[in-house]
Image (tube, rainbow, N blue to C red):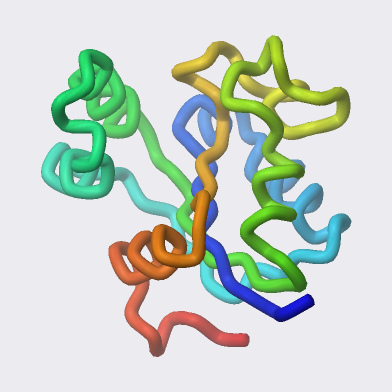
Amino acid sequence: MAIERTFSMIKPDATKRNLTGAIVKMFEDNGLRVVASKRVWMSRRQAEGFYAVHKDRPFFGELVDFMCSGPTVVQVLEGENAIAKNREIMGATNPADAAEGTIRKLFAESIGENSVHGSDAPETAAEEIRYWFAETEIVG
């Protein structure tokens, strides 16, 4: 398997509950390395831009409001098959459907406040990483 990078975000519901360290530990314990990380409080413009793919969906406004409600941790994870590995560690979007021991099963409060976000494909990962990080901020 190839070493790849993926984008990961720890959402406001998790940062408010001081879960950042526990979540990062889960990634690291499963073979992923954090090669870039920063804590940001998204502006409305940043949230709307990042989630623009969902702009015509009925939940868009609520999503933007939530993402602007508190700090997030944006990060780049690196490792073998990082995209799939990250998604496995996160668990299903709906915490009720998430496997035992996954981030969302352990920490998510609802489908909307599900503690984490991760890229779903190499193209998405590249785009999301570029949205938040300059190449010089990523140290492998």
